[in-house]
Length: 508
Image 1 (cartoon, rainbow, N blue to C red):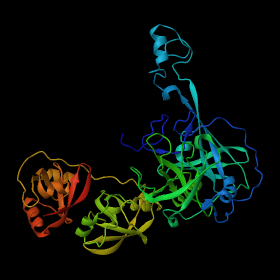
Image 2 (image 1 turned 180 degrees about the horizontal axis):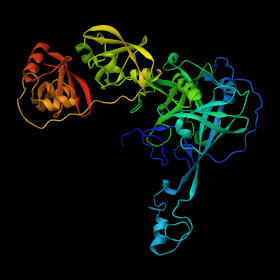
Image 3 (image 1 turned 135 degrees about the horizontal axis):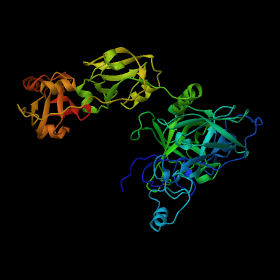
Image 4 (image 1 turned 90 degrees about the horizontal axis):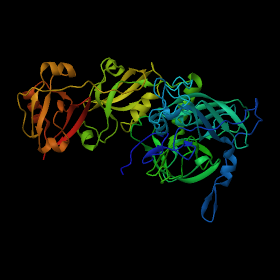
């Protein structure tokens, strides 16, 4: 079975990268929910903030985490969540008993059941409420009761209870959630609480020891340890979080718990696992604390997260593309297309530009750009360092709201005409004027057949070639001239479906 990425749901189908932290009754991976808890006292007794632990001592050649756990443990909390749902998850307007085999059996034999549609049971067809409960983890980030956890832990919760290590329970208010980064901020009515110190995730190193604390499978205050396996991991459909990968044992119920370094500083929030079975298999992922704290600050101040928007579709560069654009090494984010009317278009950003930095912050790969832009305030002016025509330059862009990078308009072709063949090994036809206008280009070549270098480069029938080495195509003859002048290494800009991408081509 091939692994796939999925967010935790009410069923346990764990074959993939799953949200680590939700433990529903029966051990299922799901949004965390919990039973009701004792009322929170109006004012909590004061407690000392979590202090920095002494360096881990060596015992029998192995690290000893006991001092660290004693000092930071009181700031780690258990989160119980209650969610009220209708049976089968049915919503208003649906038959709440549809698909229920027990209901089908009774209806087949004409047995009236109160609350079932048409049975006069007084329920009016409305579904009975059911309670789902689960647990997750979290940690206190300030002495006045702010708690960080995962968004999926409290998603859809009707009641959230935070339990401290001293056995006190507090009803929590969900200040805000950000599903894009999977971070949530809670508030409990207490003061003088122990709280964690945050570290610098950027300075952490692959191979260093880290410690996780949380409530796997509901077992509170569980400590596990391991090492950082990799940094800046990009997961499918995750554009804003450069995950910290570890081999620390993380299981359902750990979600939202802290990942500590040996200095007792939180460097991440345990969020996801890679699993074929639903349990720990040696690969866990944590949200870097710097990402989480930026989200926390916005949630605390505004109750939501606003992100800057540039309005481009981007792709990464490999060694060949970098060489085609005159770069010494494959760094930056290659602009494949620019949305009409977007902040990028207004600032003069163009397809073929390579964004190398934002306000002096380097863009090492394409995945860095959405995160960096998203962290900027909408309406702010940012300075982009770009590479264009084999030269570096700076341009200023006033960002819009939201960081949803959309793709360009689609285009199609049906009429056959002039062919283009040669050293590329392809046949095709010129775009009609109407097709070119629909795509917003002066011209292009629709690929109809291919072989040789074109096929090896990854071109496909139906692709529309609209540029060679960032020079726009106006027709078949001009396309041939551009190919002749390009030599044996060049980049083609193509329109494929709803997106534009550059493909490096090597002849011979």
